[in-house]
Length: 379
Image 1 (cartoon, rainbow, N blue to C red):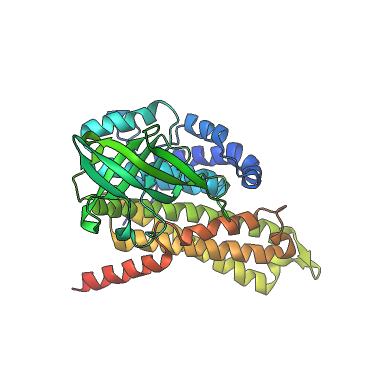
Image 2 (cartoon, one colour):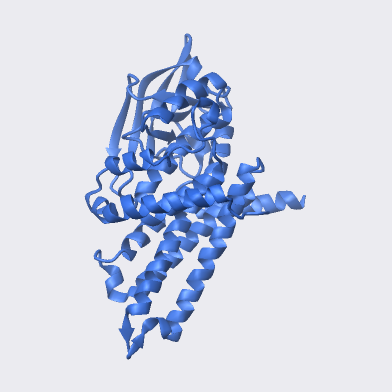
């Protein structure tokens, strides 16, 4: 499969890298420390045209593909994964509408995102339904010409700032009854619960979302009744390549920091980059970054061509996440005591990397998906 970028894609990468260098890196540490939501930075990223790239042209969007989303996510996450995650969560929240919504729904719900900075959130996870999304307990019941939603969603990125939520709830308490709904900010009964205090990605907003008698008109049901679980799986299948791209950005940045430091740090009368032990570490780090890159963009290209595969999406997500954690950890080791200090960037990269092995399906779940796909293909 050809994963070579086009000139337009390279221009997009250059733009995203400039935005990361000029708008994100100078403030990344400050937002990490303060845990403040970086709205001013996000406004400038939006002004640069880097938000919501997959909204179709017919409703005012850019109409770009998963490949372009991965390019932007890699570059911005290299600057700050927490800030970049807000963009990724927007796409995640919109994807159920992109894949299962009707044309009227896309026009009404997505066009506003093309006119101004708005945020979306994906409401699947619950306290007892993480890796096992089929166990979700949020309920929906039919009431007249609409539905009423009850439940609590947990660990929702953009949960406290979203203008639009895609919420998954079951009509009958079974996985077969799971249905997807679009819920707009300000709906009576919709509120934000606790805001999470996180190890990493601290510039992203992560909260509970509480549903207490939230009325949703039938026009805001996404897909048919009982199709929600399938819609959620298709959404995650598409988003895992982009998650892998963000992890790739972290890994790439950690390698770059380690190379710069090793070239100037001297011990035993020579730069530590010339010491055999450090050479071995840097070589291994570089190989994992490049392997992650190939897997991520292969998966993204398949999605862009309509050939989304659980095998390749899960490989990309799991490998890139593991690579980010490994490379960031090795970078801390190369920095030695300095790497453990907040004065240097690699401790933040290490903290940010960990979540990529957990959310969007843990890496253990990804390996299960990979194995099952291999067995199924073998027949």
